[in-house]
Picture 1 (cartoon, rainbow, N blue to C red):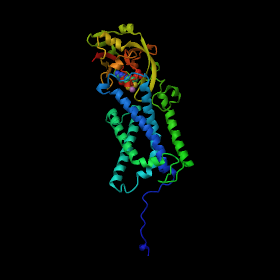
Picture 2 (picture 1 turned 180 degrees about the vertical axis):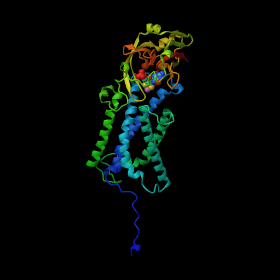
Picture 3 (picture 1 turned 30 degrees about the horizontal axis):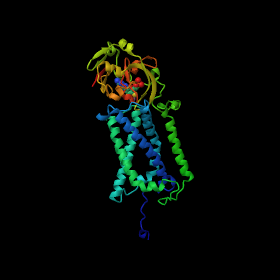
Picture 4 (picture 1 turned 90 degrees about the horizontal axis):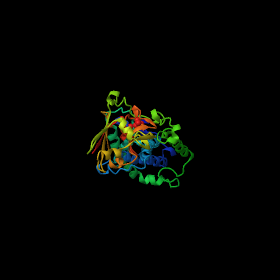
Length: 383
Ligand SMILES: Nc1nc2c(c(=O)[nH]1)N[C@H]1C(S)=C(S)[C@@H](COP(=O)(O)O)O[C@H]1N2
Ligand SMILES: [Mo]
């Protein structure tokens, strides 16, 4: 008799019921995650174009507000960090759907699931490598910046596609009062409210314990960020030390500033000090997310250029004593070169620059990524 009974198929996965895995929870988390990714993407574009402007824009990039890059890059890193708990919660909410079997019942569904795979993989990779970049750990053979840039477009495209495909579900669950016919009755029960509140608390906690690295009023809560704004000589953190850049005392011996242009000249450090009358309060705003304002004194770059007979719209190449690495040579467009706040700085917070901060001379300019604030400057070339 037994053999006559129909064989029941084994259920492939447990069935997930309840509000925490439903479309309303996914929509609520997705909205917040989408907003964090949008902020991260736009501020990332700003950072990219300030560092690598297209030729036509290089001379007209805004040098104001002086704290502009500090704000946008602070937001870039903060939104990326806030996205971590949001992404984990979102993945937990939807994971029953990520493993449904069979993988697809139609070509359309197969393509949709493929796009979700691309979305999840690219966002995860982007966030993990971005965080590792903030601690300057690169356990991979490729160059971080171009990969981060390309992956951002992949993730943004996959996200837009995902939003388009899910638009009807998102619209139906956008508001708490919507009919909710798709899966569960409408309404946010205590379980969902508690879950969303816990995710919100996690976002608040990771933000509060890291954002002080650029937002100084919260610096006392900066427990998890790799840099604390107060830790470093002369009241300013250091990204690459002189030793790491192979700047040795014998490389500094007989240092002179060489200025190449229509009327080239050289200045010794005492001669430069005799010219150094200008001061500016400007932040170093590192792409890795820390920022700190400091008081700089030095010579205006535009005065040095005028003395070399540079035409008003001239662009500038700045060469460091450092011989290797991406920051050994930097280009500066006319809008920065002409700005009265752009200095060849000789002193920092009232003392001569320390060797790690770029002794004998470094560039400091308003609204520019920290990577372009070249240290150990030996040569300015009018282009
Ligand atoms: N020559 C040279 N200049 C450089 C760097 C470098 O590695 N080499 N690092 C840059 C980076 S990434 C930052 S954030 C600032 C940090 O300046 P600080 O160490 O004085 O705070 O210097 C910039 N100038
Ligand atoms: Mo930096």
